[in-house]
Image 1 (cartoon, protein in one colour):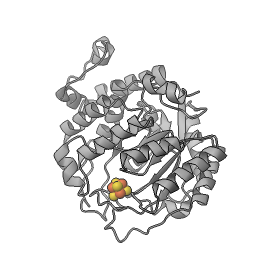
Image 2 (tube, protein in one colour):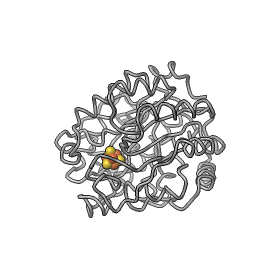
Image 3 (tube, rainbow, N blue to C red):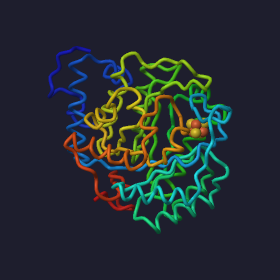
Image 4 (cartoon, rainbow, N blue to C red):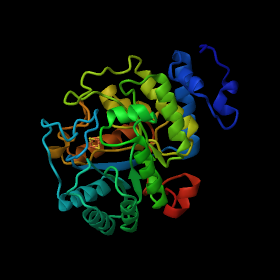
Length: 359
Ligand code: SF4
């Protein structure tokens, strides 16, 4: 791709952009001038479409028990070196109230696939948080039967986060001994059918994949018309079968993915995923200037946080929730952005009315 570009001829400026895999692969590997332009265009579109607010979603990693064996994950069931913990409902509600005090409009309740957390227990937890704190609730607890998603919605849950991880069926099967891409996509359909706002996304730079896989994942995420698109770099964990897998040499590829997602999904919420801070100092700050509009301060108590180790080098493992929230607010202020008010619900037109727009 040439380093000299006429801005008016940029493809996304000429109407709805429907790039081919090859065209996207070109942008993923483009030169310095084009990269700068890509970031600037994504940032300008973010400002126009979703504004200057950065929505805070307080992340509570409430259990690292998991029955699954995803090959890339540090808390997969066979990893005996992982020290397991499970927070009590009371602890979780206390964390949610702290998240509210810290300015979060949403709590994201995330865990491995932990059978102790039955549908009844999860619904009771959601109801308790909704009753005691005026917060939006996102659940991220893995694959469940379709009926469970309806019950979560009836209990007051607003959103559900389930990444598809890769759109390549063979690669998915290779990395997930316990599931198939087809099953995962059925879950995403059921989540939407239940009336929950849908968050999904993929891991950037998985082993056995190349730039064309990433391009296909970007297109696939776009076709799903997601309310939230969450993507993070794949960072190999030493306690997994994929230990030692290398990062993509050109680190800008990871950031270009987020900018391209913004250009293709103007109204989606796009978080600056925590793993970007493990990739580069201030990685999440860069993302907020390259298309992202959501930040997820970690509200998990420090005593547990170090054990929710999906990948090595996780940032801020020793900070308590208050310090984490204060740091996040300072980072947003330094970027001349402001913390979003209210729950920061979906801005996608078909879903916004059902949940009320972000204020
Ligand atoms: S990625 Fe999720 S489902 Fe897979 S092993 Fe890790 S926590 Fe469990």
